[in-house]
Image (cartoon, rainbow, N blue to C red):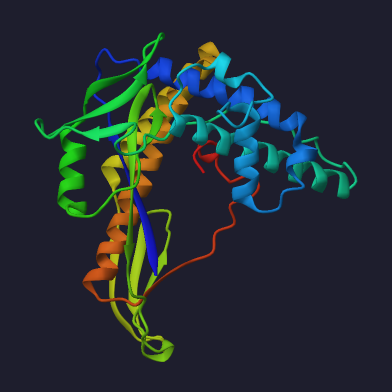
Length: 321
């Protein structure tokens, strides 16, 4: 079985045109989405995805044998071919998804809100090896990226966060990573590397498996029980990060007092911080569960079913599901 894992490496703050590169890429995606939406009836007749992609690229890119129908090359001169193809692929996917959702909406009697076409939203460029991304052989925590400085595409040296690179060297040394994708979180930029590995699944018969049963509690974060299929309990562990929960509850208390004076609209940044604390707490709990199951050589981890739809009891919990 193939497992895909990814990890984001933070780009340290420096004077490089990351924002300009992202803006021109999203502008290209927006342009292509409008083009492909206008000629979708022509493209949808091509069933094979590779041929459809080639036809879509020929519509906007001029070669010696192919005069383009649209002036993409004039609007985005000197754009690297891999960037252009990534933008074409993203635009095709956006238009195809929109058309599918539109057909489903019509088939269901137009009961809910009409779907809308998302153009450049969340479009992030991919830096392909050698042509857009190069490793820096002289410096350990650095690389070279081909970026747009407002006039031309040039190579820029970028510094990567040391702790993130140490994690990659520790866990993924010697394994080939796919082309990194640019990512933006909380006004910070990351390069997300993806790794693929082959693993063998557990083939222990069901009646002989060791089970790690997880009960997500209220007073404690989780209760893990190691048991046999016949119900025999072998071991139990209580997982509780009390200090992390206290920190989050203090933040929620500050938000509640702030909203009484200033209203909820001005508390968005505080809610974002509380959500990040809640997400980090969930990661710590998940890590402890996996470590405990691994230590006891459990074959499977079983969670209780939690209904996450609808309104949760308790006012403090609504924005932290």
